[in-house]
Image (cartoon, rainbow, N blue to C red; front, side):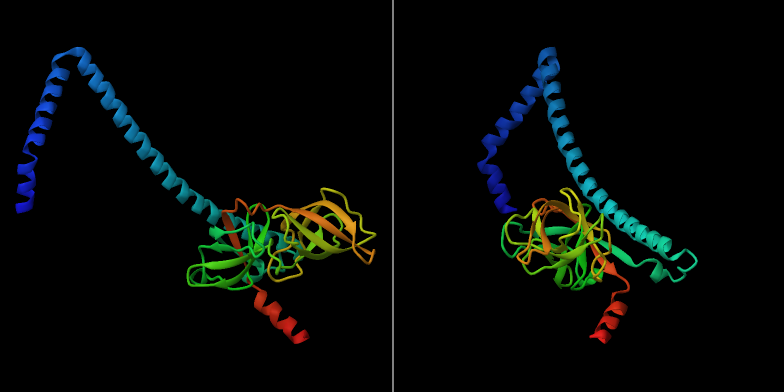
Length: 274
């Protein structure tokens, strides 16, 4: 309190000046029409600017919340579509169990950090073990395949993207079903390479490349990219196709983690076979 009084005492001249200035401006603006209109105009402008900034900030916050709601709705719709396709393939009367009827579920997440110009690129998302995530879960977005989760913490997960030399994905040509391993050669972040496509396969520029469902990570028919060009491999019996990836890793934001509800059952059978 003592320091506050000392500050007031030292600033008494400035405070008196400001008080008199306010009184003078108030008197001028109230007694004369032009200054009064100018003050009102300036006040309205300042008030309007503050209101605009406040509204923009509220809109920004609401937009983020709305995006989160849309991501959750999209995840639910994806699960419903998968269940519908499964019922069409096996017959509605066959699908009794709710788990079988819903082969995959989708968990929305957001990218918090990523790289796309390195050799060993990575993606970090804001969901982890607390949300049910674990290693070897697939990650997609509204464009196509993103990558595979390699490690998780309580609240975050690290994703190995398609543009990483250690990832290999089984992919197929949509128009004829021929499939092979899709890998990245470490060059362009917009392109990957599909190998071991038979020479006699009919392949054209612009053909769609999709997941073929041969793994427990991704559902079938998820888009990966389109064919740019092709060339024969060293053995001259198979094609190596250049594929333009559907996902642009330079501007990746919202993603969906794929949870295969039947993966443990399938994995156990594969282990028995080995």
